Amino acid sequence: MGPRITVVEDEDALGVLLRYNLEAEGYEVDVIARGDEADLRLKEAVPDLLLLDWMLPGLSGVELCRRLRTRPETERLPIIMLTARGEESERVRGLSVGADDYVVKPFSTPELMARVRAMLRRVKPERISSQLVAGDLDLDRETHRVRRAGREVKLGPTEFRLLEFLMQSPGRVFSREQLLDGVWGRDIYVDERTVDVHVGRLRKAINRGRQRDPIRTVRGAGYSLDENFTSPRPASAQRAEAS
Image (cartoon, rainbow, N blue to C red; front, side, top):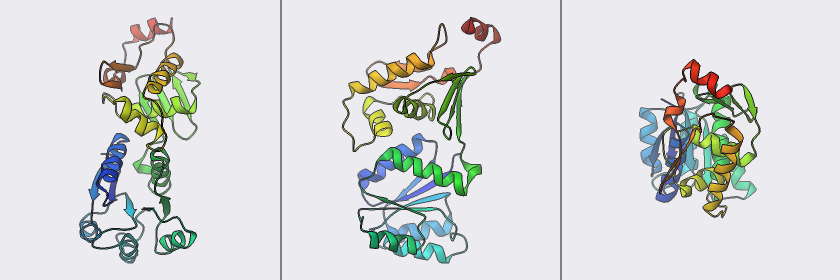
C-alpha cells in the first residue's frame, strides 16, 4: 500500500476532490469531516501525513493540531493545514501550534500534491518513490527527466505533469475534465480540447519509430496509460522497436 493520508475537511466537495487526487497518486486516503471525530480516530491509528482544515465542527483544526503535538505517538506526525485565512498573524498561529506547512484556500491542486510529495520525501523517504516506471518509460520526479529505453525524452512542463499523472494509475481511464483538474488545477480555465493537444504532443515526444504507444485513447471516455504497456516485452519485440 502507498502512504496513508488522513484528510480532515468539512467541505464535502473539497473532501471528494482531495480524495480523488490523492488516490490517483497512489495514496491510501481517509476523509473525516469533524475535528472531534478526527481526534478519536487518530488515537486509534496514525497516518503518514495529515491534511487539516483550520475551521471544523466539533473541534477546530488549531486545537486538534495542538493536542496531537502533546501526544508521543503523533508529536512528529507531518501536518499541512488548509485554511481560507491568509493573514500573516494567522499563518504564524497555525505554525506555532505545530503545523509543518500552510496552504491558503483556494489553492492549486498540483501545488498541494507537490507539497505532499515533498513533505513525505523529507520525513518518510521510505514511503514515497521519486521515480515512476512503466514498461521502458522512466520518470524521475526530482530531476524532472524522462527516459524511454534509455533515450532521454524532452518534455515541456505540462506534458511532464500529464505523463506523471497517467503513470501513477496504469489502466485507469481519466476523462478530459479529470485530467484538467489533476494536471492544470481547478483554478485555471482551460478548454477540454487543450487536453487533446497536449496528449498529442506527449505522444510525439515519447514514441519513436515502431515503439508501442503507452497512452490509450478510450473513445467517449478519455485517456489512460495502457496497463499492458507495463508488462515486460519479449527481447525480440524490443529489438524490433529499436530498429
